[in-house]
Amino acid sequence: MSVDTDTVKRVAKLARIAIDEEAANRMTGELNAILGFVEQLNEVDVTGVEPLTSVIPVAMRLRVDEVTDGNKAADIVANAPAQADSFFMVPKVVE
Image (tube, rainbow, N blue to C red; front, side, top):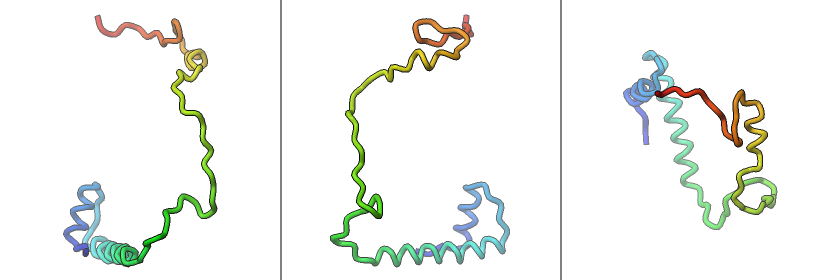
């Protein structure tokens, strides 16, 4: 895959980035170099290689997956100017 100057200008317009002709030409070369590197990575044979999440083996800590309300309702509304039964009280805005 190759990127041309028109594609760079279109992407810059979509991203709302103002670029001049010189910058578009420079970015075309840079993006083509990046895409060339990605194509090289696609050629690497990775059969039998397991994906890594870390360079050292680390066991993830697990917790019990249970549904709770957090038991923090009182803490959450503690600084509210008005509250009732762990709910925020707000002024009526629609009549």
